[in-house]
Amino acid sequence: MSTLILSRWQFGITTIYHFFFVPLTLGLAILIALMETFYVRTGNETYKRMAQFWGRLFLINFAMGVVTGIVQEFQFGMNWADYSRFVGDIFGAPLAIEALAAFFLESTFLGIWMFGWDKLPKWAHLATIWIVAVASNLSAFWILVANSFMQEPVGYVIRNGRAEMVNFLALITNPNLAAQFPHVFFAGLATGAFFIVGISAWRLLREKDGEVREFFVRSFNIAIVAALASSILVGLVGHTQAQHMVQTQPMKMAAAEALYNSQDPASFSLLTIGDLNGNEVFAIRVPDLLSVLAYNSTTGEVQGINELQAQDVKQYGPGDYVPLVPVIYWSFRLMVGAGVLMALLALYGLYLAMRGLVASRRRFLYLAVGALFLPYLANTAGWIMTEMGRQPWIVYGLLKTSQGVSPVLGAGTVLFSLIMFTLVYGALMVVDVYLLARFSRKPPVGRVSATGAAGEEPELVEAY
Image 1 (tube, rainbow, N blue to C red):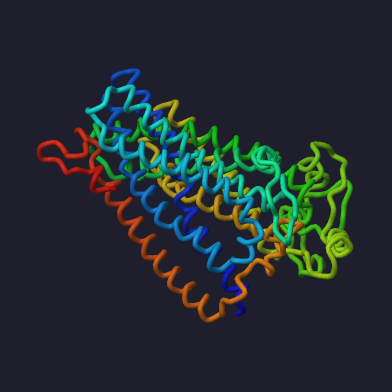
Image 2 (cartoon, one colour; image 1 turned 180 degrees about the vertical axis):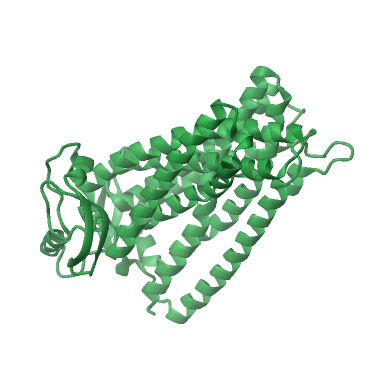
């Protein structure tokens, strides 16, 4: 394989590994903050134990997210030097702000929260976890500022073959960011909610102790509300994002629908089997639905791959401007399908919770355990579609991916680092799953502190 292909594989693998941890950090921090808020407002110790129990799982996930995220920025310089040279002036500001004003803030107050139980006043300690939650999502915001420039370049001029920022306000008010950030925010909340739902269901299937079962029923009840709300909202903001994509990256939408020829009105593909030349062997389509999704109207043209390819050749010169259609088509369906299943399971789970039947419905509890993995499937499929659907561009309309790779790297060097990163990250994933499983099995009773009460394990410190 070429250096370009290997570098793309390496960045894709390390990014997906890293993004297993990011959404859980974003959503779980908010839910823990809500649990501690309930404790401060009501004085009910159960909510305090909830915040502590789920907090130690949050710490494990956060640590793994930091470790896997460090590699990302190094790859810009190692594998993608020409890309970094092109966008360095644009990326420098949001990435620096992310580190200084978001990540450092998040890390500092997470330490205060971890060691501050029973040392700070209740409201002060509560403030620390809310700062962690806000800073985590603020960190995601600045990362998405940089990513949105890749999707829809704004606020720049081209000088000496480089993109230079001339309008920082345009960068942070990028229309793509306005559609993308809410989608990531609610996806993170859904991931955190289904994480609590899944582990709570697993514990309810195993536990006989009444106090422990009550603890996980309460955790489930809080999380299932967030799971339903976030599943619905992520779909709604995803719809807005898709409408924006029709206007700014129509090729991505055409590939997501395997739509080779323009249609007005356009039908939505439930299932299409064919070849890469647009010859359909079998297709199930819903008439007019794609136009409704794109324009909120039963009429409206959605451009096809063939017409868009001709337009791009005319605008940018000879080349293949069609992404890998099967990957985009099926990743879109995996994302949407997982999202629909999440909403349906959450709706039924809320119904059971309102009737007090959660703990007694073992079949549903098994489904709820499996539902823990649905957000991860949706998140991964969504990012694969987002990034691979933009190909062949690394910065849409400005720089092709083939132009961004480091010119001095050999294929052998990249292959070696690809293998090493994959093995190391695989080992870290095994460690992460082991630690999460181990601490998930611990009893959620007693006081959890940095030093540990008499006869107790110092769980928060050990988890970190």
